[in-house]
Amino acid sequence: MKASRREFLKIGGITIAATGVVPTLLSSCSSESSQPQFTSMVEGVEPLNETDYDNRLEKLVASLLDHKMDAVFIEGSTNLRYFFNMSWWLSERTFGAIVNTKGAPVWICPAFELERAKEQLPQSHIIRTWEEHESPYRLFAAIIKELELSTSRIGIGPSVRSFIAEGFRRELPSGLVDGSIPINTVRAIKTEKELGYMDLANKITKKAFKHAFERLEAGMTSGDIGGMIRSAHSEMGTSGSGGPLIGFTSAFPHGTRQTKKLEDGDIILVDGGCSVEGFRSDVTRTIVFGNPSDKQKRVFDAVLKAQQAAHNAVRPGVKCGEIDSIARKVVEDAGFGPEYKFFAHRLGHGIGMDGHEFPYLVRGNDLELKQGMTFSNEPGIYIYGEFGVRIEDCFAVTDNGAMMLGGMLTTSIDDPFGG
Image (tube, one colour):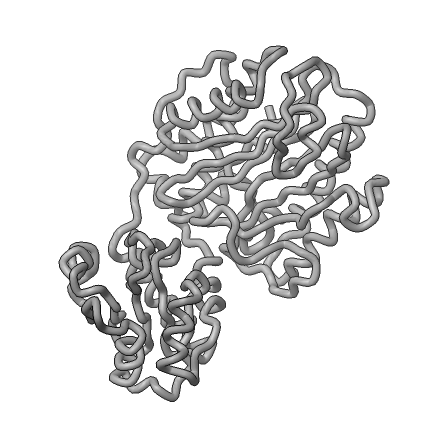
């Protein structure tokens, strides 16, 4: 049995409920006037706090132990922001954290950057510095030795640049392994607060798309439509966008240099998103300007049924690849196969602080779904020279199924936002 949207928010205990944002989300599912006056939807949203970051580090240490590692090195990237709430620009100088199972994280820092690092790091963290003529790679090896981990498996984070990883390997030739799995495993499972951010971000993007679709006029360009979407996002308190593809250009899944002005009967495919407290939305809607043709209806119906079939199959324990196969079979049974001929890409990707992140709904992925994972569900059919159709919503895996984030689900070619 699928949980209702209201039950999901109630059971999840989403933190933003206390701010009064959730009632806004739910009430805004009702039809809006043709001239909506947007106000900020992010005021009062509770940000992440020190406890949230402490919990993430605790989960990472536990994940290291689960994967038989004793430490992992993380440098400037989304991972640095996720675990430490720190942004640090990338340069040729090595800066990053050794998260380890022995105690507090140990940071490798250029000596002249020490004071800046201390401004952002908890006092309990250890900072070790290297001068300009010294080797950060030797410092890394020395720290590993001091932690008595010289014979352990030490992970290299997935976004660590190759010159740094190779420098570490020269100084510590044995024991360095891929550290992506313990990191990705933690980030893949979203907390209630994180799900609240994503639900709100997806709602905002859908409202922005709806706002633009209600104002379409013949002769408009992609830039005209995209400008309305950006403006609506901004009025609701986020920096968001949408990339419109018009007519034959909609057959290019990620766009084309070719352009087309809007005419009667054109497909319009818009893909875009925004973020709330760093957590992303990703939405695609396809509509027809004017009256749809029989072929447009047939393609649209196949894509919608594929999305719905995949959604209905989601539950903990089902393999990621199986969800892709279920959607693909619907498309092929509708006559748009075989394989990737028209449905040219995987069904979906993980999403969180990065628009695309681990794991993926793709053939051959035997990873089992777990409660708290979040994905896009975006089947599509693309016919070059004619048009393309894609419908995309993000969902969270619940204890007994799935919940589409942001509501406003497509029900037909004439109803892209569920009324």
